[in-house]
Image 1 (spheres, rainbow, N blue to C red):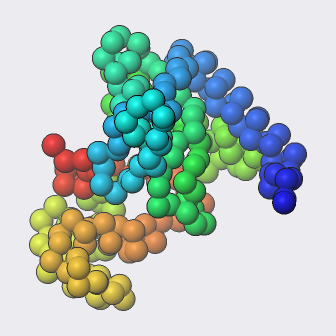
Image 2 (cartoon, rainbow, N blue to C red; image 1 turned 45 degrees about the horizontal axis):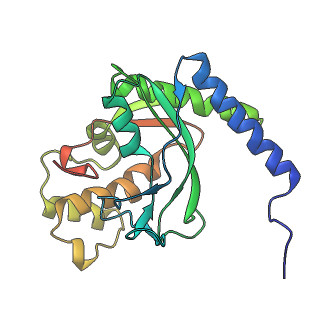
Image 3 (cartoon, helix red, strand yellow; image 1 turned 135 degrees about the vertical axis):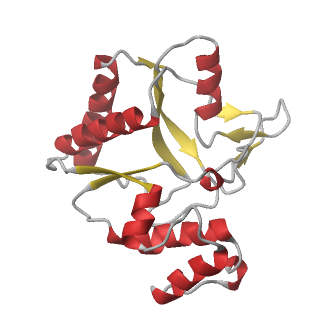
Length: 220
């Protein structure tokens, strides 16, 4: 039986400094820390984020939350004001180099902030966390979804149909699976991940904004 943890003390100490820095970041800005339940009664409504089922002996099956979003939005509706949370979250079916079934999430909400102002704050937080790791600040570029597609894929994502998007994929050497060949939104997602984002400079931060409404995780 292997009883020793995988994390060395140096990694644990760095993680502690990162958490301390994140909490100071929000405290300095007057954002209140909250803690909401990890065990919830409903699964995530996003079909692409599967939940992990828990089975308490005293109740019907429950779920380990995939994010604290819903509980935090209830607090917002009740008048909590600006809030943030650092907590473990759980997502089934995700395991690999970039994914783990359990990981730590920072989620926060700002009253009256525009999406671009929140993006600026996100970059500021990341810059402070990178400084703790001894990494230099990186330049940031804000670019719209439309501009990114025009610049790096040569196509208007708001007007192109599925056939036109598929042709751009093929001309860029991207194989289009039959399952998405006529799915316009799936093709946009494929182009963004494989063609557009591949042209982003690795030493820069990119804030990609103003996605089409159809690219939202949950459509109304």
